[in-house]
Image (cartoon, rainbow, N blue to C red; front, top):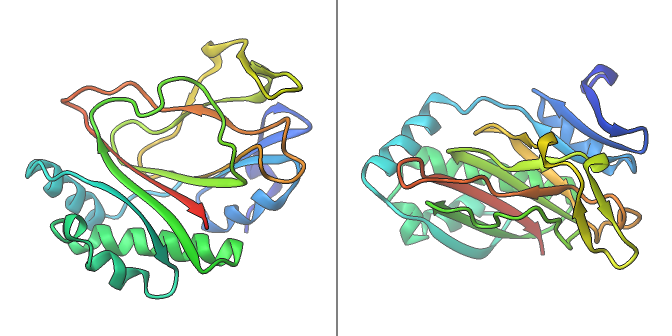
Length: 211
C-alpha cells in the first residue's frame, strides 16, 4: 500500500505528485490533490536485454494504434514492427496496458510506441486529456515542473516562471499525468516536456490514452 510518507508535495498543499515502488500508487491519481502518480519500478533483466538487443540491431518503432485491453498481447504480437523485438518487451507493454485499462475501467487504449532521436515535444506543455500514461524504456525520461514553477491564465495559456525547478523521470518509471480535461483539474495539469536527445542516446517512449 502507498503510505502517507510516499506522497511528496512538490508544489503546494493543493497539488501533489506521488511516488512509490508499488504499482498501487496509480490509484492515488483519483485524489483531487494529485496531478501525477509515479510507479518507480526497476525494469526486469529480460526487458532490459530486449531493449538493448533491439537498439543494437537498430530496430525502429513508430506504432500508433488502438488496442483492446482484453487480448492485448495477441494484438501486439501481430504488429510487425513489434514482432521484430524480443517477446519480453511486448509482454511488459501488455501488462501496462492491462493495468491502465483496469484502473480506468476501459476496453480500448490508445497506444503510441516510438524510438526517438530528437525531442518529440521539446517545449513545456500540458495535455488536454483526462490522463496520460508515459514510460521510457531507454534514454532520458519525461521532464516535468511543479505547479508553483508555472502560471496558467483563465484561457489556459501557460507561462513558465522557473525552469530551473525541472525534474526528470527515470527510465522504467511509469507515470500517470493528469491533464486539463480531468474534471476539476483545469488549473493544475501536470506540465512536462520531452528531454533533449542525441543520435547516440535514442529514447524508447510508450504513451497510453483512454479511448
